[in-house]
Image (cartoon, rainbow, N blue to C red; front, side, top):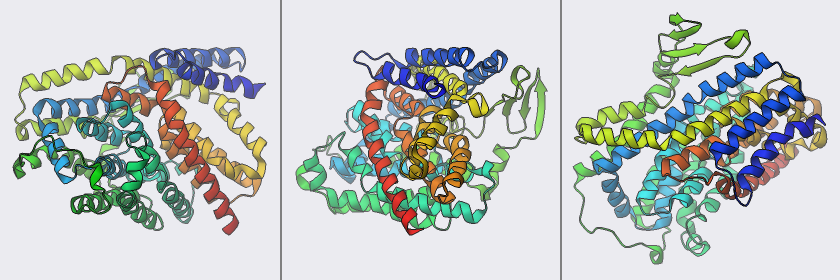
Length: 525
């Protein structure tokens, strides 16, 4: 009965967003949060004080995803109104007019590198508007970027989901590297299939077959270095793999390697572009990548400065650190805490800083900035409500320690599967990403459960945790926060349920590949 009650909010949310006349996310998610709260109070007899504190934390936590989305939208609108996006579109067309090449270069390799540098959904936020600018349909682009941005996620944001996601388990460095090795291998296998399924949202199977050699070159140029680096390091596989893959993909596209001429689109402009104009149009992305690398590579020490918790001042129980980390500990005298890393969350840095640096580079006027700010504000109004509902629901689902609904669901799955857990372990990781909106949070939340299940069932701990990490990455395809973010950036309204229906299919294919790889690795262990 407890499992059925725990599942009620999940079933209600899926039903409300995928039924024939789906509710928009800003309606479905707050109602799901309310239902979760009522079940917690009525069935699980949760503490009202603790539930209220979790609700407050959920509302405050919306600042993280919405500030990232707002920053990405602001940069995008500045690029549009300054004319930089138009220049960039013409330049990309001249690299290759082949649509498959454009999709692989921007939606796959470029996004792969951005995920390695930043994570937090920024790859889709940056790559998607560029593809729409090239003439691709917004809905299809949103689906492609959601599906593409899964393979690199386990090592996104300089490996955060791996080294930080399992930090609470106090694993040895040897164990973390073993997890990294298994994770890289499983993603390598999935990478041969997932980008192809993503391309199908925008091009025909005929076009995919005709250009398959180029697709394979672009895929392997990212995933092979990614896999090899994962054997010795868990911070840089996605960043360096993506950078190398982007360079090779561009070179191959320019040379026409593996590209079929029948799938070339006509140039929208035959005029050549001055080098300075192209450099200016690329400058926002160059700045973004440089800023992200400088602020996220641990060895450069700037990352430590941006995450400094040294107190600066406190007011009414809210503490502000020297790095402008705003924290509220013990909300309503409970164990619930909240914090916002002002300088580290990829919002102010890199997006706002990049926009400010672009003022002289792109000769931006105040009128342009004002217009971009106005459009940004208009686009995030309803997503704020949706994200508040999502984050409150997550907090409510995780309240109760061993009797938390999310843990009851996980325990039920483990009891049902027993030693066959290796076949479904990745799905628990995906469930965590679906709810929390983060592969890192999924690993933090379910890493302990996966560790315990591995010990109970005598499965290799490193293998089970790798499946958790892979599952958390593939969960990005159906993650509510990511779907709301990319839909908001592209101006897609009330289509979240339809998007989940489409992206869940490649996610299940990913899960099947993970299960197969898990079984093979278990046999070899």
